[in-house]
Image 1 (cartoon, rainbow, N blue to C red):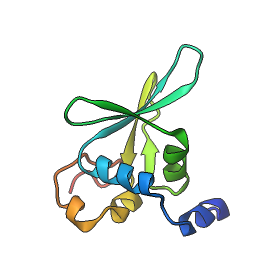
Image 2: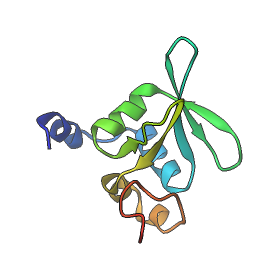
Image 3: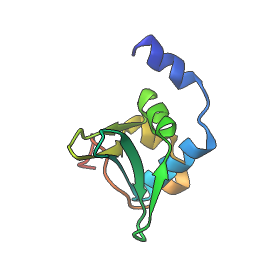
Length: 107
């Protein structure tokens, strides 16, 4: 683990970061879309069909901590919980069916 990731892992998660992790664990989908001019727009696609824009700082903070990672697809990459991210989710939320992470999907 790099010293930067170690440092980020010591900082407490913000309320919006915890809410985003819970939403991903519940089956909502986080994608990053590119605008025509190349800017990134992070959108949370909820199970009811609604979308919500998520601040880039929230997503980047979770990436730096190693709690989520992208599948690096173009034009809209999807973010998934890592094993470490699943460990941060509240135990009650972990019991609900949700998306698989990028590793350990055969459980």
